[in-house]
Amino acid sequence: MAKFHNFVFDRNIFITYWKRIEKSPLLLAKMHFSSVVLYELAATTISADDLEVFETWRNFHDKNETLLTPDKTDWWETAKLIRRLRFGDKSASHGLTPKLQHAHQLQNDALIARTATKAKCYVVTEDMDDFREFLPFMPKLVIVSGKDFFGEN
Amino acid sequence: MEDKSKNGTNPAEEKTETKKIPIIQTLKPKKRFSKLEKELIKAGRAAMQAIGRNQERLKQELERENGKVS
Image (cartoon, rainbow over all chains, first blue to last red; front, side, top):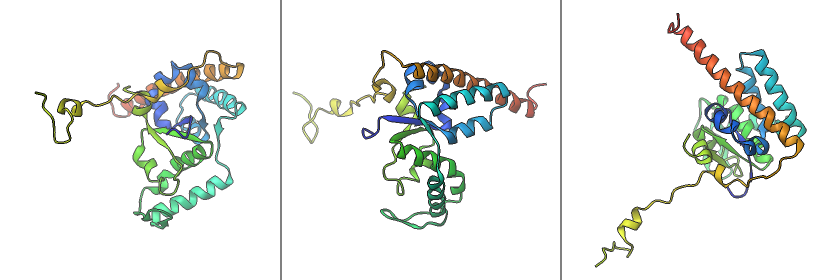
C-alpha cells in the first residue's frame, strides 16, 4: 500500500460512497479518474443533464492529467490477460491458473487495474475478488476495499 | 498472581485487536487548493449528486417494472 499515494475509484465505490466523496474536497481534488469508470457511469445515466455534468467533470480531470485512459497497448495487454484467465495459461509466478468463465466480464476491471498501476495508483473497489484474479499477472497492482478506505459507511 | 498464557503474554492483551484506521483519515490534508483543484471539487460534487439522482431514478424504474408503483 505504501508504495502508491494516488488512488482511483471503481464504479461501485461511487455508487456506494457518493455521499462521502461529495463531502470531501480532498478526495475530489486528489483522486485519479478512470475513463472506463466514466464510461460505465455515463452509459447508465438516465438524464441528459446529468450526462453533461459527467462531461464537465471529465474535462477537468483531463486538464488536470488525472484522467486514466487505456491506450492501444493497454487494450492489447488486457486482451491477452483475459484470454489467459479464460483458458488457464501459465503465469510467470503462479503456475496454472483456473479457467474463469466470467473472465470476459472482467475486461473493464482489468483495464482499470492496468491503467491505475501504470499511473502509480491503487484501486479502491468493492469487488476485491475480481481484482485479485489479476494479481498473478499484475504483481504491482494494489487493491483496497471500500471499507478499508472509508471505514464503515 | 497474573494469569499468563504459554508464550508469557497476558490473555486479555492477546484478545485486544488494534482498530484499523481508514485510509481516508491518513490522507495528507490540504490547506489551500489551486484554481484547477477548486474546479475539480465543484465538478466532482455535481457529479456525485448526479450519481445519487441516477441511483434514485434507477430504483424507481425497477420498482415500476416490478409493479410496486402504480
